[in-house]
Length: 432
Image 1 (cartoon, rainbow, N blue to C red):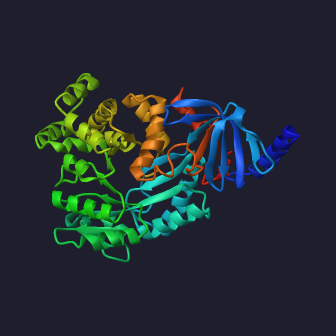
Image 2 (image 1 turned 60 degrees about the vertical axis):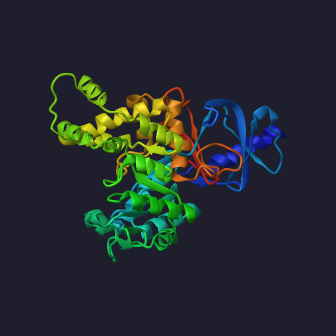
Image 3 (image 1 turned 135 degrees about the vertical axis):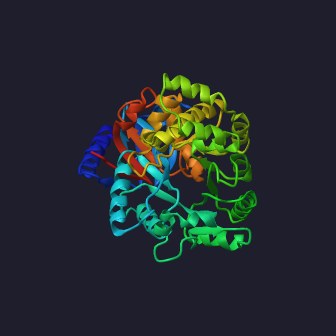
């Protein structure tokens, strides 16, 4: 009787997900005989069953201990691997949100979800558009990851940037509730309250903020219970001050160079460097001139995640004056990781590549193991976003955001592309 029930369920299941991009959802179902990639224990749990109820993980147990019953549909996935849904912790979907960009955003978000990305953190854009995308993704009106977006704060000087003008269309750059110019007389309780009112999941500090302004932003954000994300350097404020201020994540590994004013001369030298001899040897020797040990200790002390963004750093290599950004940034990521700094995974590549590319670069160029890259793109990216209590690991009570693979991704990071199915908020999507 039990085997007939399982076979019948699988037939119905296959019919339900046979069309491209189809989504499929029971209120209550069990995924049986899986290999779970446990990012907390840092190992694989072999032959386990996950029970999902109303979009959340209701139970996790060895398959031998699971007793099927008539109220729970059973889906057998023997020899398959399940990973927490991937989180791209650095994207931009609404810098210039014309109607075409909305269409393109939906297209890219759909592709992201169907490759295993169940959540993204948008690091500054037009919150009017992002709010709509976030709402539609949450309720399933569009096929897309959950979208957590930011409200940007920066010094007044920054708002002459053409990107901010495009993002504030219909209003004034620096005076939008999701894009605020901050100075010494800003009404911080009001600024933070307006940021929260946009529906933002976090405040992003971008540029030209003083030490005092950084401290005031973070203190008020904590009082109003919204996390703060930041660039690793804010021109006027050094990385050490930002890390100690109470932010939960900093972006762009290369920016740690700006901790020491003496490094400005090195940057000028690197910007004019012409290839001559062994490039690796050259950059290894240049990196030896730098010391980030105290910054690493600070990040560990304050539990700050480094959103490394190696994907976008590598793009800088196309500009001869920016090769240093990648070469130094890559070495910082590797060294910080060895020191015990929590490294998140965010692509920041204008959707030319997704977080899977970031994971492969972490493995192939920064010395991560495949499992460490998976943890970066799940648990630590969830920490960087401020959603670890809901996502980022496979645990009872968390959202059923899961990513199923035909091959073991801890053996070979390229297996992250061998996708079977994706579950987001309990709904199953068939990318085939």
